[in-house]
Amino acid sequence: MNTASSSPDATTAHLGLPDYNFQSNWFTPGSPVTPGSSNSPKMHYIDEGPRTQGTPALVMVHGNPTWSFYYRRLVNALSKTHRCIAVDHIGMGLSDKPSDLEYEYTLQNRVDNLDALIESLNLGDNITLVVHDWGGMIGSTWALRHADRIKKLVILNTAAFGLPKDKPLPWQIGICRSPVGALLVRGLNGFVKGGVKNCVTRQPMRAEVARGYVLPYDSWANRIAVHRFVQDIPLKPGDRGYDIIANTENNLSKFADKPMLICWGMKDFVFDHHFLKGWADRFPNAQVHKFEDAGHYILEDAHEDVVPLVKQFV
Image 1 (spheres, rainbow, N blue to C red):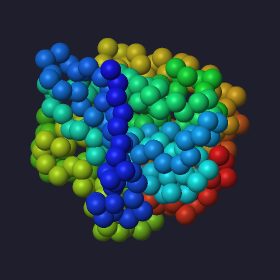
Image 2 (cartoon, rainbow, N blue to C red):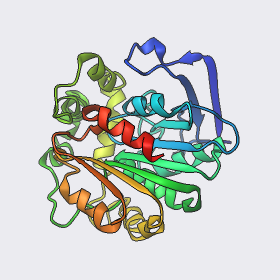
Image 3 (cartoon, helix red, strand yellow):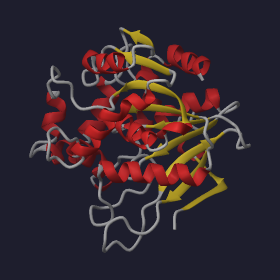
Image 4 (cartoon, rainbow, N blue to C red):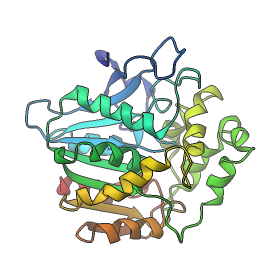
């Protein structure tokens, strides 16, 4: 069975991270994901705000290598009026970090885990989906299963479609998928530390904030999901998960009548103007706000601009 649990004494306050003081909740997706595993890994998630029937909900889905900490300012700004859910994918943030024998790190499992969690929470049919980075594919694939429940979408430097034809794969991603990827990602923690350094461009990330991004990934074992995320990106037909991406891309028109807010850091070296054009071409009625001096971590770089826009939009 799927199970969810929380404790009033289990909060994130002990971590000492700025603006990240919430009750911790855990969800167990059910029976072992991979045959031979003795325990099901637990997902950590934030669930803040009113839980009365009819309360509008925000479902916030992160990518790699971020976690629910990325959404802390949105949770703080909106939890008085909205039920705010911010997940930590398995292997990320405060969730369990199982080995390959205990969990299969695939796009399919990410979507299925998110689906099971949301179904357990009884959020109703007034949901705003907020996505960033690889969370765009995970969240959009989940949302297409429940398109009638999704009322609005907030898009933050992400994609729900394949690599645009005129966009080369960034070399930083390519090298992390190469034979030396494990050394760079899991040994040197280069993917996480690289994000802290290079995914903000307005000004350097403050030390206490940078600590929040690095904190969950403090060992070779605890960086497994960061590496598997990069390895699992489907690039061509036949790659694992490619059919999921193609199906999601082909069905995005189901969101055509949904209000959409797009906030985009234009100095993102991965999700750049090619990806923004992909969204704008598909959703010409979306509200688009470009931030010329902001990078990939737009909720860090431009939070003072983006959080009020999201608050007004929802």
